[in-house]
Amino acid sequence: MKLKELLEELETLGKENDASVEQKDRKYLNITRDTGEFLSVLIKAGAVRQVLEIGTSNGYSTLWIASALPEDGHVTTLEVSPFKISQAKSNFKRANLDHKITVVQMGAVDYLGQASRLFDLVFLDADRASYVQVADQIVSLIRPGGILVCDNAVSHAEELREFIDFVDSAGGFTTTTVPVGKGEFVACKKT
Image (cartoon, rainbow, N blue to C red; front, side, top):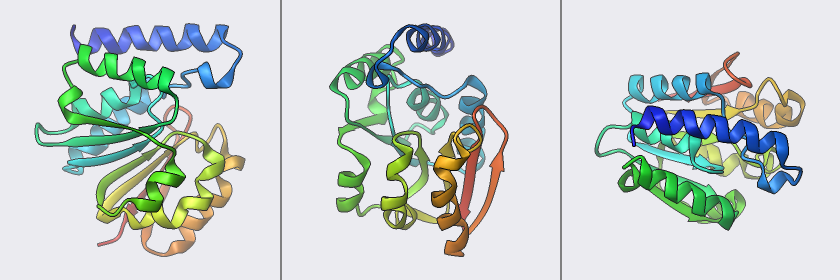
C-alpha cells in the first residue's frame, strides 16, 4: 500500500474512532496532517537520523517520522498499550517502514530512567502530566544541535506550561511555539 493512502486511511480511522470511543485509552489522539508535514520538514532540514518518539498510539505520527528519515535513520517509539502497539506494528509493516522502527512497550518515566544514547529529535505526544518529572532526562538525551518537539502546545497550553518553562529556563535551547495543528513547542539545543 502506498504511504499516502495509508496515512489518509489512518486519518479517517482516527477521527471516526475518537468520535465514537469513550475510554481515553482506546482513543488514538493522532497528530494532525499539517503536524506530520511539519515534522517531515524538520527531520529533512535538520538531517535527523535518530528519533525518540514518546507516544506511538496506532503509529500515525511514527509513519510521518520514519518516512522522512534517510534510509539509515531510525525511530525508537514508546507505547504502553498492547492494543495500540499491535495496530501500530501492523501499520508499520503495511507501509514497509517497519525496518526503521523499534517499538518499546514501556512508559516514558521507565525508559528515560535507563536510556543513555543521544537522539537528533525527541517528539513528545503522550501523557503530558509526566513530562515535568522526566524533563531533565528528556533534555539530556537530545544531542547538541538536536530538536525537541512537543505536541499540543496550544491546545493544552496550561498542562504544558511547567514543562515548557523548564526547557525555556534551562538556558541551552532556542525555543518557539509554532501554530501548526494543535500547536508545536519546538526547542533546538545549542551546540
